[in-house]
Length: 285
Ligand code: F3S
Image: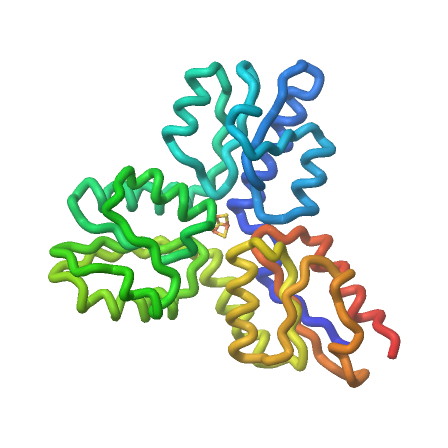
């Protein structure tokens, strides 16, 4: 079989940056008896997090597990300013790996709420990035919706200001914004979709149209990877979302001369992509 890898696959610059900072911090404090913590996953990829744990990173779920005098790494999706302030007061050194695109969305959320708009965030309300944007907005005057079906959750307001989770699909945001026209006299739209994501989605869309089977590689909890799978499925019903080549099912390939497209999320290591490519190219019927 032929394997075609999307040219946009592999780490985005935000993930690369977060990992480089984290690796350097772990190296710096390795032999100094200083603990390095993170809360939740720094990036959404289990294999990468396991590797960082082996290098000394302590991933905790509870604030009380972070000890005074330690170092705390803010994940690429950003975190609550109040939470970080409390850690600073306890003598914890903060290292921020938030992606600059996420920081931009956070500051737009804050600006919109300060100017008296009702904030609408288009995204997944349970995703760490959206939670950080809500926390930076510093208001309860906000609504988070993910699809046009949820438009009824947005009440009528004089003024509505909109931001998007950085990994949103543009067409979905457009449909929601069209629906918001009935909800307010004035609408302020800040396009906070990350350009890297948009480009990756375009390339994946195109590739999925031209292959027999499409494989999307990356964390099942990664929003940008899940969106790639959603886009590919719209154009190719034989689309599968896998974390590693080990999840490939032989039954997906019924003929020897199939063309298989491969696209990876922003937090998918090159190795995971090349393993899938090797598997496809060496597949024996
Ligand atoms: Fe940042 Fe976009 Fe990557 S928001 S983490 S550059 S997908």
